[in-house]
Length: 344
Ligand code: UD1
Image (cartoon, rainbow, N blue to C red; front, side):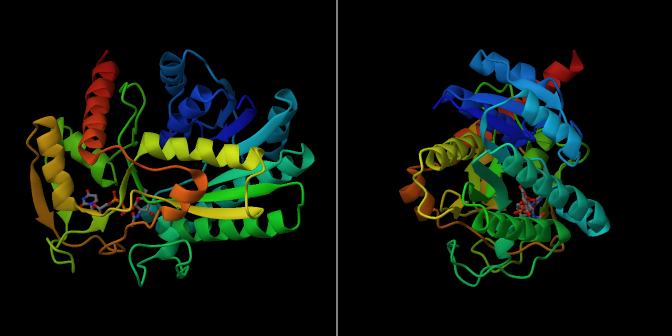
């Protein structure tokens, strides 16, 4: 596939891994990002892995004129992968308006320019958060979409609805929403990975920052859930596996293999792991000992969620198959590498 693909938020965590996989598959990528939560050096990482430096425009997707300018400059874009969005659940409760404004306007701007520049395909970065605590596990795409527990979750639900309605009214456009479970790990080169600004909110970056000595101990949020060991269970998916699913989705869109103009796929491993299992696997995979302490449940957390990813397995011809220990080792190697680099 040697098409030109626009990647918004392409210097971010999942965005950068996806750019690498798109380049590896032969695509020409155009990255736009406002660098509000990522670093320009990520482009060096991408080029050292792939041998190709993606085109980059520092653009806030909320700025319609700049977005238009970018599409004019890079004529012939065939598809967009849209990552650029705010994603912190807690912050979204404190700043709902900022979340709605940023996440909704950026998507609507994109859909507008896709129409204007006749870009036929969109892959949207969605989340399993749209399901809340599902009634039945594993979660299929048919599961009920529950009222969102946070403004962040609500933006994902609303964005999916905006896409669905827009696609229904636009015969020349198709879209795929990918609902991620818990993306973790880093590229095996350890040259790109997740770099949260400030204190990490997610489990795995908190673990690696604790192991390297930046945090005193990991806080385990609750051991009284209705799960075998009492800690929360999630479906942790390797970020490179996840990135590859985006390439499959782009291929499906551009090779006209979609069964419907708008499709939705869960992206997970199909297996849940508890917080204690993650700690144990991390220690075994890296040889590091992790300090941790028990804390009360984190407000808003659910007990258990993991994917039924069989639709993506079947329809996209994709499977998340990197073993968890390898994924956690990759997160650790990235943590060590980035701290070394930042010290220089
Ligand atoms: C969170 C978001 C979700 C988002 C996803 C992106 C919330 C409520 N949900 O998912 O919307 O799509 O990140 O990756 O924030 N844990 C600890 N100690 C920590 C951090 C986490 O014990 O320091 C536990 C949590 O209680 C949970 C598990 O680890 O059981 C995973 O937490 P996390 O990595 O934050 O992901 P989610 O909460 O599932």
